[in-house]
Amino acid sequence: MLTGINKQEIVKLALMCINSIGTPAPGPVNKPLKVWSSQGASVTILGVNGARAFKKLIQHLKTSYVEGEAVTKIYSEKTLNSKAQELISDIVNRYGRYATKPQVRAVVDKWVLRFHADFPLTSYYVPVVNLKLMVPLIIGKVIFHPLTPELVDRLLCSHDYFVDHAQASQGLKDKLKRDAADLLRGENGGVLAEVPMAVDPSLGDELCIEYVEQSLNVLRYYGYFLYSPLQQAHIGIQGRLSKGTLGTLYFVPKKQSGAHYRHTGPLVTYDLSGAYLDRVKTWGLDFLSRLLANKPANELETALITSIEWSGRASQSLQPETRYLNLWTAVETILTCEEDKGCIKKLGQLIAKRAALMLNSKKGRESIQNLWNDKLYTVRCDLVHRGSSSELTNYLPKLEFYAPLVIMSYVKRLETGDTCSTKHQFFSQLEKVDKRNE
Image 1 (cartoon, one colour):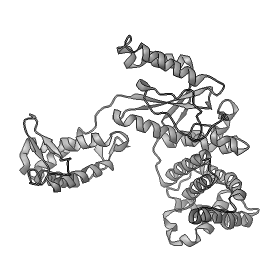
Image 2 (image 1 turned 60 degrees about the horizontal axis):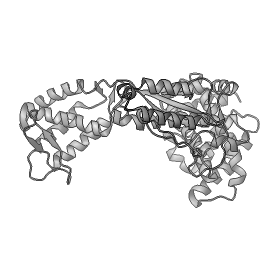
Image 3 (image 1 turned 30 degrees about the vertical axis):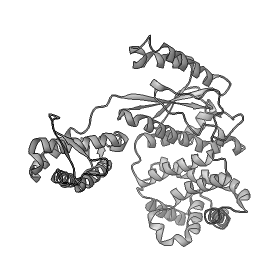
Image 4 (image 1 turned 90 degrees about the vertical axis):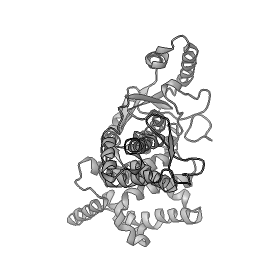
């Protein structure tokens, strides 16, 4: 069932669509909206006003939900267009172009109830190289499997395409095995990311890449704590993934796979086996995994996920300027809120004060704030407004050290079940607790 929509608005837009049928001017140039009768014997075309109303109808649908999930995470825009066209066709077929508002409302009510189609649960796969795992790892919607020849054989043998076309597909099956062998060759090994989804097939690949990248950014963020020197962390996990479902499982053999398409040379393996995995779990990996799996419920959690994605991008950036700005964006995302718009001129002071609070630094509070405001924020402004900073080399290591600690403190506070629902409440509470402890 479709939820989160304004049925009155849907009825209004549907009426505008059917009232424009048959007008002399067709809809968008070369793309008139065609509404077929149920018999397929005739076709009508929406006029300009109808085409505009139809476009608004699609935009309205994009903000709706199905079973608690955003409709854009289940249906492609092409399918949403088809479903909206189905509504207009239903009205025209039943009542003609002169349907009354009650008649349109009745059709809309039925259409909303049958809107959601039961898609089969399908797994989408994408290879990840240079990540070392000993056991499967779940992060959000993604299951990371250590890639072994046995796993490849099992997946190939169980896939519907190969079951239905056993003889015809032998060449393709052999090619996939060879590609998998290339991926497994060498000490770096490989991982296969699986994303089970019940979605529009035309949207599955795109969402698979989005969810895998999101989960990988969580792992990249932990690279700041796992690896020293930091130079080793930002090339650990492949930054750009090969796209494809199992039917067209795509590997990139015999190529260097790095954080950036220009990166060449050997990679340092991102090791998440044994004690490394235990460590990141202690530092809140399971908590972040739950946030990714169960849509963030409030402003604080949404900000945290966004911040970690920026931090993950920072760890993958080869250019120091990009790394600095991405990491600063990660911090600013969690340390600012809507209510701060009025004091934008004092943004550096505000972030410096909150960074010191997040780090819970009583001793040396003033020096910490001075570092963030007088140095780190100044470098950020130089990069944003002038494109370069003479102090970048000196203060990038400082930001790379402190920014992940600020985010980690944020993780720990939310993990303990903070009752705030907005960032403004969160910061106000931090300041109250700090004053009581003085």
